[in-house]
Amino acid sequence: MPHPRISKKPEGLPTRGKTAANRLRRVDNFILLYEPSLLSRMDGWFARSLFVDLGYGYDARTTLESASRFRRVNPNLKILGVEIDKERVEAALPFVDEKTSFRLGGFNLPLQAGEHVRLIRAFNVLRQYEEKDFAPAYERLAGYVLPGGLMIEGTSTPYGQLWSANIARKLEGGKFPLSSVEAQEKRIGELETGDWRFEALVFSTNFRLGFDVEEFQTILPKNLIHHVVTGEPIYDFFEAWKQSAKENYTMKTYGVRQWFIATAESLARKGFKVNLQKKFLSKGFLLWLPD
Image (cartoon, rainbow, N blue to C red):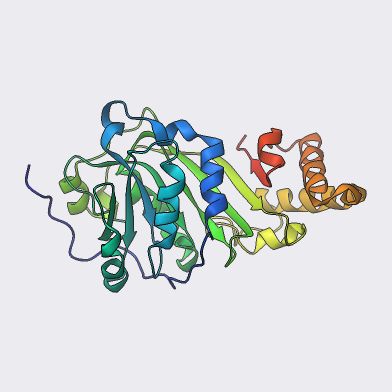
């Protein structure tokens, strides 16, 4: 099969590109905790499907770090780092091997013939866009993801101590991904995609900065950060979370981790749908689930 024609102009804007070693380690660890089977699947179309690190930054470190972690559960996992900046791609080329690629692209992913995507990580990417660009970016990316695949998209602090992210799944009943050629040639408004289902909004802390609910407001994903205002569900959630933190402040005596867990349990009693599994809470992950 001939090599597909890749769009000459990647869709999107360059990110600042700054990153730090292990900045996204907790993001990777969360995926390994949340659904390791997605990384290890090798049935059908998943056999050649990729993990895509979209907007990896000025050097290849986050992609290579993810490769090391994810290949513990799937040694044959193919990984693609995508950057809109040509110089960043060229700098990463020495690290290319039979399972690891770096290519120039944007929201129009530069896939080759026969490739599809099982997981996209897009961190510190959409935060620089206008909110109106959020949905089109999601729609564009959905065209490459296999039914049942995931995207984790959000924002972290510079060293990854705190982050928040949307977990979105490509619906099993959605349309099958377009071929690489079709996806590259269609404009955003024309792209036929299956739907995303938002599974969770995840808040992550490594507890080293203490625990301050308001700090998470500054790193909300683009679709939420401007909606922490009266009358919006995300506002109500944060008001309840802050109140729960105050009500359970004495738990800090037993450590920040115990205080964090107690606030989540308090949120659940207030009627918020949060995941109370200790495997998440004890590691600093609070999952708010859609109704």
